[in-house]
Image 1 (cartoon, rainbow, N blue to C red):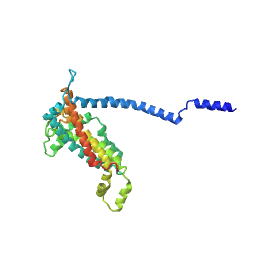
Image 2 (cartoon, one colour):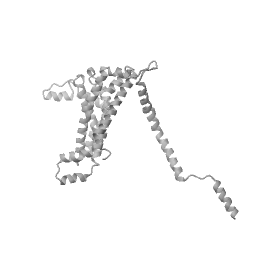
Image 3 (cartoon, helix red, strand yellow):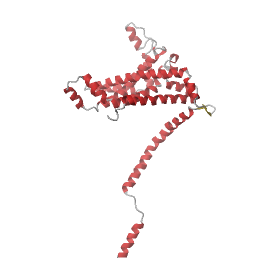
Image 4 (tube, helix red, strand yellow):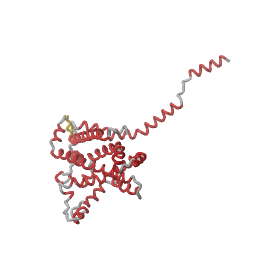
Length: 315
C-alpha cells in the first residue's frame, strides 16, 4: 500500500503543473484586448504616426515630388517661408481670427449654457437648436451665409438698408472679408462649447447655490463666486480645443473666400499650407509651414494650461 502511494506521489510530482484558471483567463482577456485594439493602433500609426514623422523629416529637405529626389536642405525651408510676405500675413490673419473667435464664442457659450441650465419650457429644443450648427456640414453653412452676405439681395445688407446704412460687399471687400469669416466661425462654434459648459454646470452641487441664497448673494455674485471658479476645468478644455480648432480653420475660408479672399485678406496658415502643397507642389516648404503651425499650437497649449488649467487637477 505504501509503495502504491509513493508511486502516485512521484507521478504527481513529475506531472507539469497546470496554470491557475484565473491566470489563463487573464491571458485570454489580454489577448482579446490586443486583438480589438490592433485596428485602431494600426490606423493611428499608419495615418498619423508615419505622416508626422515624414513631416518632420521632409521639412529639412528639398523634396521634388515629381522627380522623386530628396536633398538635405537644413533650415533653408524655414528661411524661405519667413521671407515670404504671404506666409507672414497668414500668421497674422490666423492670430486675428483666433483672438476674436475663441474668447467671444466662449463667453457667449457660457452665457447660453447658464440660461439653458435653468428650468425653462422647451429647453431641450433650445439646446438642440444651438447645437445644430456644430453637426451641420461646413460647406452647407457657408453657402447659406454666402447668400446672407450677398451685397444686393443678402439679408445683412437689406437690414442695413432699412436703417439707412449702405452695406459693404462683405466677401469681396478686403476690409470686411475676415470679419465675415469670423462671424460665421463664432456662430458655428458656439454649440459644442455650450454643450461642454452645460455638462459642467450640471455637476456643480446645488448646496453651494442654496448657501449663497441664504447669505443674500445676488445672481451676478453667485455667477462670479461659484459658477466661474468651478468651471475652470471645463474652461481649460474648451480653450485648448477652441485654440486648436481656430488655428486649423480651413473649410469656411476655402468656401466663403476662395483663393484666400480678396488681396489675400483671409489667407490663414492652414490655407497657405494647402496652397503650397497641392497647388505649388512644394512639399518640403509645406512641411516646414506645418512645423511652424505645430509650434504655435504647442506654445498656446502651454500658455493656456498656465492661465486657465493650473487648478484643474485640484478641481
